[in-house]
Length: 584
Ligand code: PEP
Ligand code: MG
Image 1: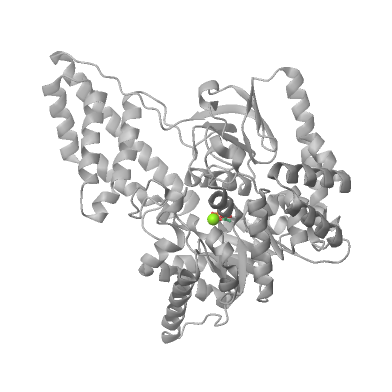
Image 2: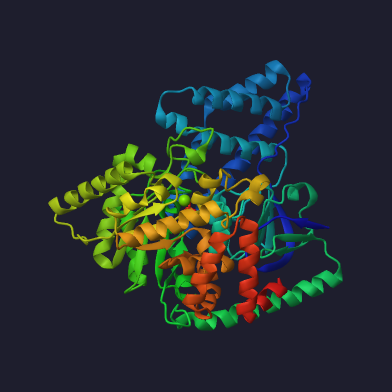
């Protein structure tokens, strides 16, 4: 059986499926006789004891692997387990309503969640996710379902899930998750982006993968093409083993360019930098030859933990990154939560359109007390290397000015305390909203650089949700509207004498690079793993040729025609790329 999805993270992997589906807990509805009540109570107590020891074990492991602050979240889970009122209510219901324990417990759990939902107290409302998490764990233990956790895997598996949150992905045990596939999601969902960072081949948007695949099935995942073969025959296995080896060999030959400059055949130099989510990625940034960090997604510092990271902790993280890359620039993007990245510890209400909602800079401007902690930490780290600060989701000049005003306040606070920072720290705006792209001439006068966030820019200009697999076919970086906006941003920035980079996934797309280079993009920032291939392309092209390609691409009427044109050009100009494509 061959399933077709959306390629999310390149590479081929062959292994056993591990179904990870936290959505489906089917609660049995069964009436019990009076005589069964003591047995049901005993089952309930066993489930509570088992859940407690599971949580303690997870807490121990997370403390060891990620530090004690990440493990603190489980203290709240343990408190829920010890809640006498909840336990007694369940026992009462068993006696009075003659329901089986799963049914009684899940009804009371729902009731609790509803009560908490209506509470005015922010802190108490935030406890809903803890109650829900522990509740699910207890139910699974009552049902005898094995606890499935991605951090606990004992053998190498390919994770098969309906969906994975970016925070699930961030905690994947790197050694044992060798690949993953999901039913939903798009190429630029943060889960897909995280997979690339962790260098785990992945396919998303398979729609019915979890229905068709069982744990233990053998899978071939081709993350470059977006295909999954379930229980392949020996001929397919042989073929893919061969392709896998060739893929690795080609990767190695690209990596040889690691220390070469990213310069075209006729001497036009651009900067190739890396996008990172976690400070631990610095090793791969260095090994793939990035010239710096073009996007540090700091929101991951805020995930999978209780409470917010302190100024000190953030300062340590930013300083660690910049001091590991001496002489290189590190662009720290301020907190960009929302969309598909949520933090359980912040009271952000559920929204109908999270990508259009209270997110990123909008949230930060509304919560200066949270924002300034981060700004001070970034400023303090700027004393130790070339740190730049960048604001996400800027929609217009007013918002940009407000963000800069808070940065100035943070500087003032540090000055008053005699704490050192780079007073000339460079400030950039992400251009990822069409309104910013169209008014970039105004914005360019008040910042030092732009970085184009195509992941969002495409979704907003084409009205295509970036994480929705059903409309993924419409998500076209080559749509004439997108190309025109990009040209406008690059020209607008250059007119005011500032440099323009791109940190959306488009910057790492081999066909797109031909156009972007020709449009005059100064900096390309991408997952470290794709840097060698992009460097190869840049080094094998003439800037004059790229300019012609860009001009032609802009004259074509549909994204499909642009893609066909750049694909043809790539294959014509670069034999290595042709070979790679044939290899899948
Ligand atoms: C973008 O939108 O292109 C971007 C780089 O930011 P993110 O993917 O984190 O939204
Ligand atoms: Mg974005």
